[in-house]
Image 1 (cartoon, rainbow, N blue to C red):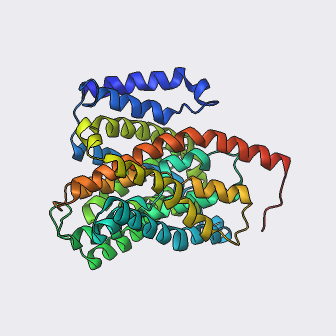
Image 2 (image 1 turned 90 degrees about the vertical axis):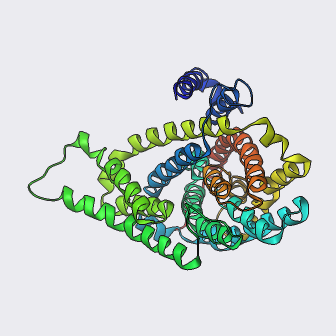
Image 3 (image 1 turned 120 degrees about the horizontal axis):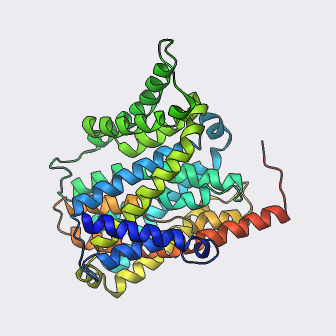
Length: 397
């Protein structure tokens, strides 16, 4: 891991030194870490060799950390006020995206329908790690931020059951165990339950008369809850991503003070974890993997980004209260990232016949998405902010 730590340190230094340029150009911090991973990995210098299990664990922890932080931007009162547009994206846009991506995989790449649907499930969710580039900016209209935050926070956990069931349908296994509809439903219920119970227990302990929490220590309390929640989810077989986002929502609802104290810590942890995961993902990519994608595979990846997400979301948001430019931004900004990587790596270890091809197509889509969305997040945010100032609107109650 020495090579990994060295590469991470150098990439972090480069990101700091180039931060001013990144803030006003298509160059992004995400791109810097992905490039560093590609450079250090087998593709160029061959200085770092990370196993797929290691990369999956890093990406999974990153996704969990970001979902826990993002959930705290959506306490229950806010969800009650702003549920309509996220519901459109989740209940209409996401299933349509699944169908479009599946059809592209079947007709363009030539996969059978079941494998095509598996790829559709892997690539249907958006990534909260990269969506946070807009969600975390105050100059982006609140309705759009809420839509992207809630949608990306929930669709990862909702896609996982479909991925597991389709792997089982194709005769594969996850973690040495067969998957079934009953099993994944139990995982969802456990994830929801743990996501509610863990913050409530933490808040109950804080209020015990014999204990006391200083303002400085208050920021660390949610981090402790998140760590224990991740371990509990793993041990009990709960859906960790639903547990993380639910816990963030619960914490922000029952203890807004603790949530506010945790925000700077959560953002720092999430950002460092994201960069480490990008580096690890880049170090996993080989020339053989890229060569196996083929022309049809790259065309498929492009169409997933420019058609597979934008068209369904624009249809889903017909009649929405969002402004036209906000609907366009929501339709475009559906990055594919760590959720897809984690699910792709689950497929690689499942033993199904088409595992390598599914992972190659997932990798192609994620690479293009990271490049395209990380290069356009700042310009989109600035444009939305400028238009909001030029044409102020009164938000609906």
